[in-house]
Amino acid sequence: MTESFDVLTETGEYAGRTESREDCHKYGFWHKAVAMFIINSKGQVLLQKRSGNKKLWPNMWDITAGGHVLSGEFGFEAIIREIKEELGTDIEKNDILFIGSSISTNIKGDVINKHFNEYYIVNKDLDISTLTLQLEEVSEVKWFEKEDIINRIKNNFDGITDKGGCWDYLIKFYEWKDSKK
Image (cartoon, rainbow, N blue to C red; front, side):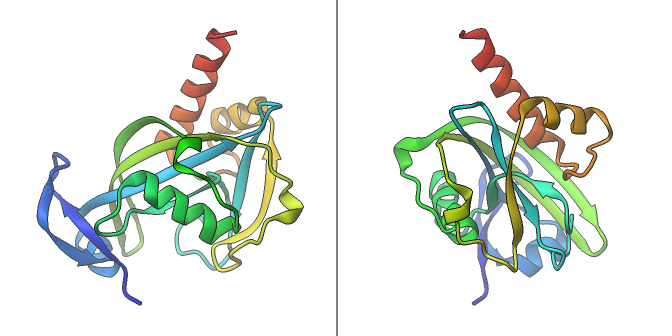
């Protein structure tokens, strides 16, 4: 099945057309992507290790779940779909906290990703041994301490994807949460 995305203008407005994933990445059309982090009651964040078969960032630790927003979807719908696909678990709309957005351009090889990104947090305790991983996307999952992630970011994204916006918003969320204590 060919995925299609709503094409956006460079200011984020709908351009009134859809394009395939392949054409969006070949020609650099702007489109939406979502990223979410699950944080447990201990303050740990669940990360996924990307499959070694992935074109971008293979075998790197990454956000809990995320991906492209399909044509006609809202970001929160894409998050619900992606977590089910990638980790085999369900979340509800009311579980999702929107924490921000950014734009990004990543060019790696023949892939031009121009994204309007939406970032989300879900506070949830999960037993990772019960998750069903989508192996073509995810090779493993693991809970990480906040300090470990911050150190990895400071050390040139040591072992994690270099998607700055995702990690910036996660740190901003932790700072906000700490300020409320």
